[in-house]
Image (tube, rainbow, N blue to C red; front, side, top):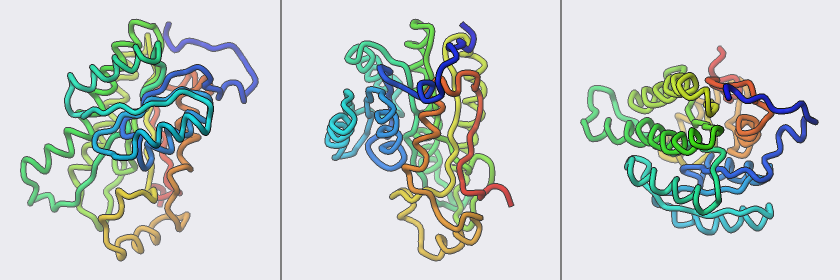
Amino acid sequence: MVLAQPQNQHVTKAFDLTGKVAVVTGGARGIGLEVSRGLAEAGANVAIIYNSSKTADAAAAEIANANNVRAAAYQADVTDQKQIETVIQRIATDFGKLDILVANSGIVSCVAAEDYTPGQWSEIMKVNLDGAFYSAQAAARIFKQQGHGNVIFTASVSATLVNVPQKQAAYNASKAGVVQMAKCLSVEWVDFCRVNCISPGFIATEILDIHPEEWRAKWYDMIPAKRMAQAYELKGAYVFCASDASSYMTGADIIIDGGYTLP
């Protein structure tokens, strides 16, 4: 059914994900870990997909114990279409169904545009854009059979503006591609799932650790909020997108950036 209409219900019930099954790629650390926690706090059973994390199993155990839900970790490389499809199908079998896919895996690098090698450019695109698509594609095949589902992409304010002083044309282009891809998929898949994006600004995670301190000072000066967000400040938006509270929203890009994109 096109954008299936839920019953009118108490607003706290509309946000309730009890009994839902969610997959979060890159769910073992950073934003993905807090999203996994947030979905579980709302009642969802959660499958974390990771590539190289050594703490994914422990993270899944912590989430399960803290929220009285089922949680498990699965290893997969999102850039390998067959591999990610196999793992997502296995998760749906293990958990009995699949309701929510959060395509969150991402990497960043800072290279002057004239200096990118084909390998450096391709690596960013394979993870951030190709991997996001392959993950969503695998979930959508299940959603189409079920007749319902929900895809949430982690994009970035870098899809909207050009970050400075760092030079990261590949990252920015990949995230802009994610936002436009989500819009396309929201129309193509409207009969069986919703598709939306969350675009964070500067979030205090280890992905920013590669940048020098003077860059951070410049960012703080450019952000009206004068601070970065903690990753947990995003989890409510993902629960909103995953729940009946956003039942008529598809193709949206929610920017959460402390006002960074506004001046």
